[in-house]
Image (cartoon, rainbow, N blue to C red):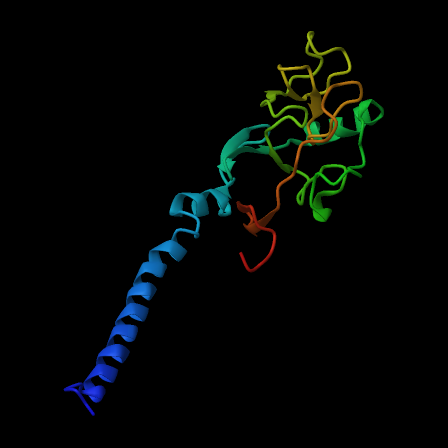
Amino acid sequence: MSDGVDWKRRHFLGVATAVTAAIGAGFAAVPFLASWRPSKRAQALGAPVEVDIGKLDEGAMMRVEWRGRPVWVLKRSEEMLRRLDEIVSSLRDPNSQEEQQPEYAANETRSIKPAVLVVVGSCTHLGCSPLPRFEVGAADLGPDWQGGFYCPCHGSKFDLAGRVWKGVPAPLNLLVPPHRYLNESVILIGSDSETA
């Protein structure tokens, strides 16, 4: 007894409804899943930054931003490099044994190339931004001061390689971010591998 029911048509409508529901669920899921991806701004903040140091004079420093943090690039003179040896006994971690830098920067100059220092410009105590104080023997910093970075928030001192002095609140050297040279005058901050 069929009672006027067209089973073929009913089956077709059931399958068509299920297919339409699956397509609709797919379209609804796309924006939901896309919302899990970081925004373009967030992606840009985490992206490596290219820095051209070709016109940076000896003894000069430039500031760039990487991941929302200040990064300093200092082109040290021969005189500045010579002064690094004069205060080793005043430093907490002169040999960079704490993991505040990539392995290729765990040396006396804390850099790939001795003349160029790349550090994050945030004090390792509470994150204040130290001031560049490159003059030797500054009266307010003591007669042993050979130039470096001074944090005015709590008095932490760092030398021209970003190494922290003994007896100051900061517990660690300034952080050296991952970086590499793309050529003689361009540094890529934020990546130290060839696949960046």
